[in-house]
Image 1: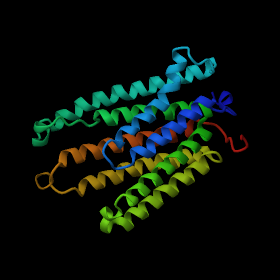
Image 2: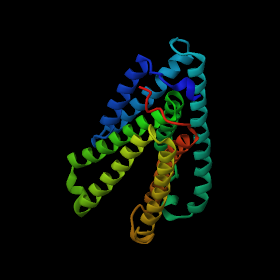
Image 3: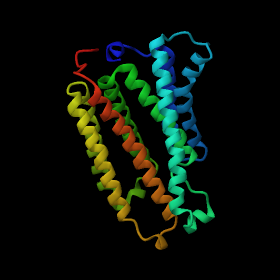
Length: 261
């Protein structure tokens, strides 16, 4: 796979779709009524070109690209199956909680499930298409950009809501951003080391989220406690899974593509 992936460039239609997806991602961060629906542009950007190719309206891919597109779709479908299974398993543990009796809470609500499907498909496709070192390098840079965008939007649209947590939030963002940039730089030069480092980050996220869960106030003292816990656990699974995929793909790669441009 690696030998075929080197030197590949996305077709122009995919770059156009990527631009549409970025616009949708930016607009979805605007905290105003109706703007959240712009996130649908990201799904359109990811699945639009493959749908046109599957219908035969675009004839710009070879058998190799078609196979990795189908494999990425299989990975996304596997995630959907596991997420639906976890929804029902997890629900058995909290079905008698008062909050669950008043509203239908899920570990992976529909919006989260759709977003994760898009992310898994995109990550799988790009890693296969570009090869692990280059793919992880570009994906981590994109994730770093989204992190800066999210934090910047939060500050621009009411930074006072951070309150006394502004400095700790800045410090955490700087640390996390530095970790991703370092991982991106190392991915193309020392893939094996970068893979271990990214997997260590996934483990660290699990530990930090577990500690955060322990600091939550008691359920009887907090409105929406169950929804908060489910949201933290689902976000942990989603983010940790992406980092596990990135790190694992680097560990399975061989050598470095530092010289490939």
